[in-house]
Image 1 (cartoon, rainbow, N blue to C red):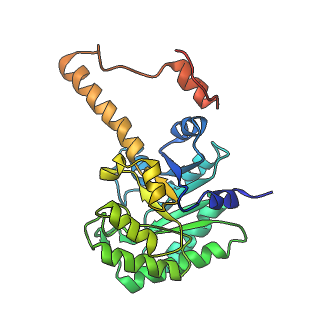
Image 2: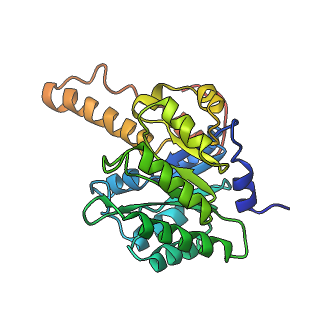
Image 3: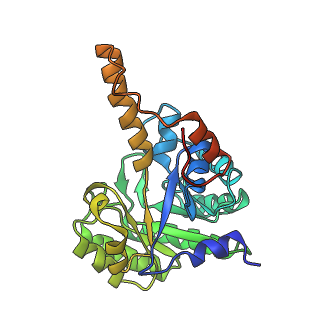
Length: 277
């Protein structure tokens, strides 16, 4: 019988992408699982928001792993950890984070090439060594584990698509299982990323790519579509919008269009289907 890591790897089919549904707490993970998600991802930004902290570099490794373990234990689905830069600069830090991620039951994780101290990208050669260490640690686990190498320089406005392609190809060569460059300039650039390697490519459904349908990602050869912190920010947007009207205007009438307790309770209990309030 296939283990959870093998099941997770099998979902990565170029041209037939699954949606990695990013949850920010146990409740959101359970709801997404009940709604039919095939796999759950954590979100570093969404989790940071629950702690009252801004995104990027504000969560420790122990906090992130404890949070990830709570998500793993809440569902039978594969869970992939958004583990920022691996919580350390050195390649050994990345390797240790991968080993710890597997210990708590994650089916995979992603690590980016960003130094959280200055929000800059690591130099090319050092970034590659970090991925090499993470990939080697993943292969040494004795079980299947999907190690995703991220090139975040486009997202962070540090380097361009050409540098992203160079990094992704190098990450592929040193053993990354899946590759990810969030927010390339266009769909054509996303297709260039897919063509640059035979490894599965993750696309982020955010910004202009939030308007791209799954079938379009499939036609581009994408294997996995992640939501990042988008769903967490959707809930924040609803909170902010409702609070503005309620607290400033004392107007409750059109701003408390909430899910019924029965519906939420049923989804938390793992019941799918249309429910009446």
